Amino acid sequence: MRLRAGSFLAPTIRAAAPLPTFPTVTFIDKLSARWQAADSLLCVGLDPDPSRFPAQLRDRDDAIFAFCAAIADATAEYACAFKPQVAYFASARAEDQLERLLAHLRQRHPQVPVVLDAKRGDIGATAEHYAREAFERYGADAVTLSPFMGRDSIEPFMAYADRGIFVLCRTSNPGGDDLQMLEVGGEKLYERVARLAAEKWNRSGQLGLVVGATYPAELARVRAIAGGLPLLVPGIGAQGGDVQASVVAGQSAGGTGMLINSSRAILYAGTGGDFAQAAATAARRTRDDINRYRRR
Image 1: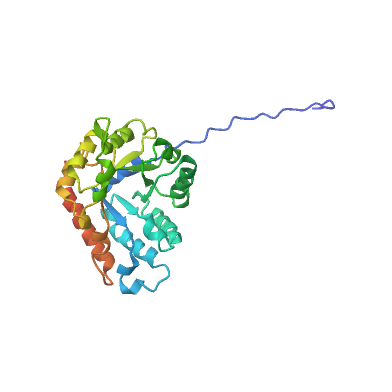
Image 2: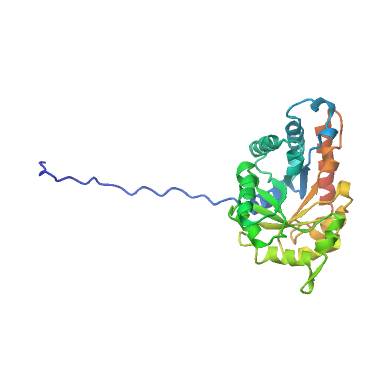
């Protein structure tokens, strides 16, 4: 076929088949799946104190990573989540080991959510950087935040729509009474925080609350206000919180809804070469103790 100058044949172009789409697995999805798969509400806190490490680790340049990775590998089957505390790494100038640890957890235990215990809380522009730190640098599934500066200090974290946020509500330390028990418009301040987290602030659907095991009455009150929101509950073990009272007060209608954290009682259950095995035994016992009081 001859073509006139300047003419062309347009090729026949078939519309490309649409790429398959996959639903995003959110933090709440991942946590809910883990509650069921592990039959556990135990959160293993990773608060590394090198002065308490077994002798064989103390001279290693990567001792903090090695200790936490060994604990995590040994306790993963009993855990619904891991909770590394940023300050323990930062004070030792070991943020690189924290990055390495979270990469290890993603590779070895991708089914176990990681809550970065950072307790950040600052103005929006700064909060954007804290959010990048938690979710991009470290790759955490969730983070703990202070609500004292209000909604705009939390919103940058909600831009990561699949990630979780645990807002400090009724903390396990005695000094929490200084502010959290103040009357605010006919309710306690911690009750107001719980209500905001459950309603106005929770546009991502990924918010939870931090409520200490040392205050079971307030824990029950938060559960009543917050409905099915997940509750991160520190304070059992070394801090003296009662397991039975905490589970009865804080569990959801289906017997889940909680991440009951234990750190020192698991991390330092053993001091010798079998420290990881001792931690696994402590984690299993703690999980079983918690399960004794759950609804089934």
